[in-house]
Length: 263
Ligand code: MN
Image 1 (cartoon, protein in one colour):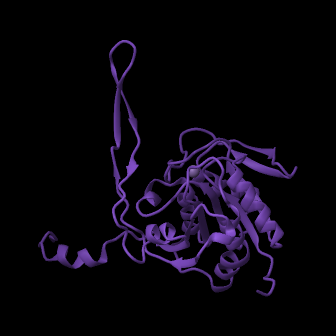
Image 2: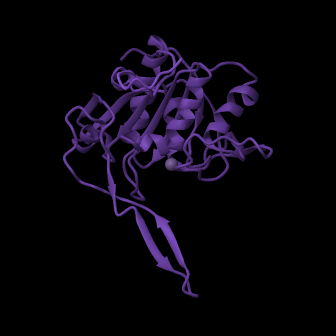
Image 3: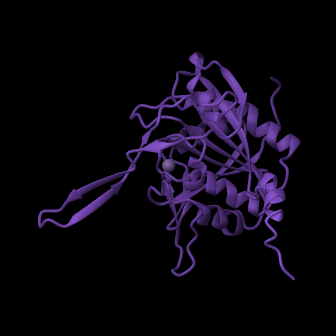
């Protein structure tokens, strides 16, 4: 592949500014010639969805990463970090692309609703900046970041910047946790139907009062052909276009048939 134009990128995540997945992606993006500014949460913020902080102040500070470079750490959520990155850290200079990740864990199917990683990308596209969310679909301690990092740095980010993305649309990337050489390839996918079982665990504290853990074990039913879950399960990197318009256009027609509208 010919060398691509260097891109100006804002990099964030939801695992926190010191997370190894963010660092792996930063190194890969810079090795591909891109210019990377990091603005990420100052602590882990997974499963924070698209929460933003309105009723208390946000703080920004610079922290050194493992390569000695300085990153911006914010006291808020992933969406806060992207807003602060675009409005303050970059002094309003719009980057070519916002990249979020690499998340430690899958963001497949309905996961995107809970995901701080995907919400950081959503915050970017809401403000008109194209964005990519990146995850490796494993909670193992020792993760293979390289396949996802190199694919985004050398292929997907340059393509997204060159083609542009439609308004209010982002790309959600999930890679299997495999050595780069063992990846089967890349698939364009739809969101899978991902269901969890055993979602609640109830326990008792030492004085006999109940307390609860929300959790969930993935229901290992057959995932649909063409879905993100199937692609990752089959060893492919999955790329799903996600749009913010959650209107059910198919059901809209039937709903009008209910004669709900008045006036
Ligand atoms: Mn996370």
